[in-house]
Image 1: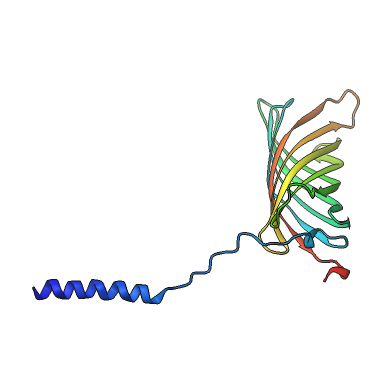
Image 2: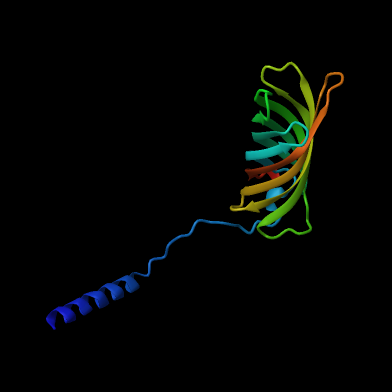
Length: 196
């Protein structure tokens, strides 16, 4: 009987002790109510796509890229900037794999429709040049995409973009390649001089 009483007292005391602590665990921040502040005229955007995958329709190839980018808001919701590309492209069959590079100016527009306090849809387009390591050809490259930026803090957003890409070599009788791509990344929004 003593053991049952001692065991019951120990369990009850442990339960009450745990209940009395009532520990407040801080959860990581997953979103921030930002409104229009990050996309105001004069602000800067720096970041890029860390995971970018695509599939080419013509060449039956798969690629993975890293795309750093920086831009300046010329107007509320409109950013103009420069994007760099570095990546790896794998082909089916006997075609050797390639290390790719590129540079492209871009324009991004944040849609006021469908936006929330913590996120915004956007459309973007870019036109530039691309090439491959060891190759002498420089390709014309263009792309368009639709994406969503989810703000986890006032100045950092996680992004997902789905897009269409077109590439054509600058040589005679060159064939074009087009395909779909999916990018995951982040952007840091820095306030401009007048927005601090």
